[in-house]
Length: 221
Length: 221
DNA sequence: ACAGTTTTAGTTCGATCGTTCTAGAATGCA
DNA sequence: TGCATTCTAGAACGATCGAACTAAAACTGT
Image 1: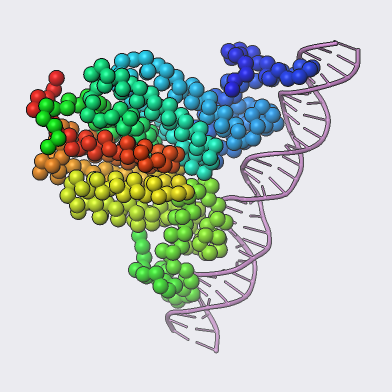
Image 2: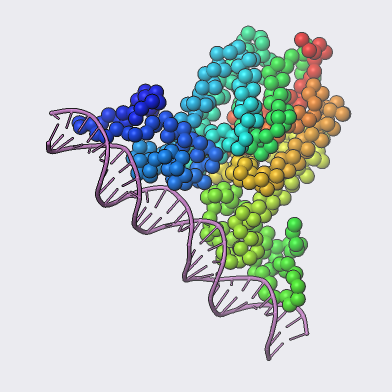
């Protein structure tokens, strides 16, 4: 979706249209999106006004509407920007670790972020999942796709761990991955109401124990 | 908090104040709160206008403000009403079952409700947890208290099951209860984006398996 | 230098927001 | 029957919402 690879120094080309090139943008799209993410992330979609966005980005309304479309489209782009910079990056970093470490590191990072999150913004994707997705099919599809990528990350690591014998085989990787996805959502929700280390560790620990569990020679009754 | 025990037939006394009793209410408080719950539940706090509430309840603005205070207070009362009729009732019903059945029935009910929830309203408490609680200390306390009651329900049942040997003792009841609370939140979130039976069952099943797990004679390494 | 295009800044629009106000209607108690 | 009180209905309030409009400024390509 990004048009230029301007690394954040000067104006940026904008989109190169047609014949006579005209006045270039005075703002850096990445910086503006960062500011928009902060707004939408902390206040939610409905509670963020276009005027809030104008103040946070330093742009006027006309500039925002010109560059990003209406409020909903702007949120869409801000969410994409957040996912790219936060979730995709985390998956990319964790998926090249050994199975058990990958999942442990993933949740360790979530735990850390949740406890450091002083203004209780939570995860912008989870917020979008409850704020916009239920009543907007387009957002629902987009959010579901990202959740699917997280689920796939879990499943691939679990399958690898089960194959090499470092992770429990007592349950199918498919279900374990779904379980971890659910726990992840749960942590993100609980952290916004009760951001207590003991609580969140208590939520996560059994899920990890489930991965490590020894089958026990005598099974089933 | 409720003042009268009017069982939903006629006007209701309202509050009995001072000297000369005056004109009694024409509406039934419970019916009005039911309508308000539907509104706030499906649209959220911010997206529900007072005019929406007027239409759904059939009352005029003045009546609403007279009887329930401002919009925030009205939401507060609607949320209380929801919790009383939905969550408290579920806990009350499940906690008198045997430990494993109590937890199984609890999640079976959540699963059923989530899959039948065609307009993806989710759980009003979870919605409140992400909508209002993060930025409103009073709501945060209230939501946290209800979450604490759910957690306590889990813990008491797990402790009972561990004591009688029907539930796994490999993890402390405290953590298992927190884990179940997290999974519950996760299911409620995921259901609003991907209300698929296979997904939600996949989230829940490993948590239940964790409770049933046989320790296996040789443990720890 | 000129033409063409796009960005800026600020104003303005109609709609809707939460809330309050002005009436009048209805009731209990003296 | 009157008085006090609380209900109802609906209009109205100022504020703010998302979005569009009007010009002026800034830049590129020829």
